[in-house]
Amino acid sequence: MLGLHTDASLNGKAHSNVVRRALNDRSPAVRVAAAQALCYWGEEGAALPVLVDVLRNHPIGTARLLAATALSQIGDKARPALPAIQAAMKDKLGYVRRMCQHTLAHLGAK
Image (tube, rainbow, N blue to C red; front, top):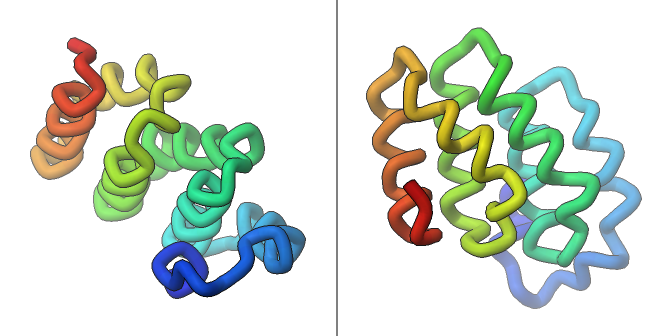
């Protein structure tokens, strides 16, 4: 899954259906990677809710960190998720808070 959003030679539309199915995978890492790839391909509508859900609700801190990192990496496409990113500034895991702080600063938000 990771290679789909890091290899610029891949045509996202050709893989979109497979990646969309991965948004429902049991693994949060797979869901986050799929969502990030879809965001890169301009399909934020399907992807952002997955990233926000993992960031807000996943019980495992590293999963929340993956979602926070993905939101940071997609840049301006993360703007609709700003309320969730701001709320995650109260996450119990410091790494999540720092990544959200970085994202908010990058997007010019508080």
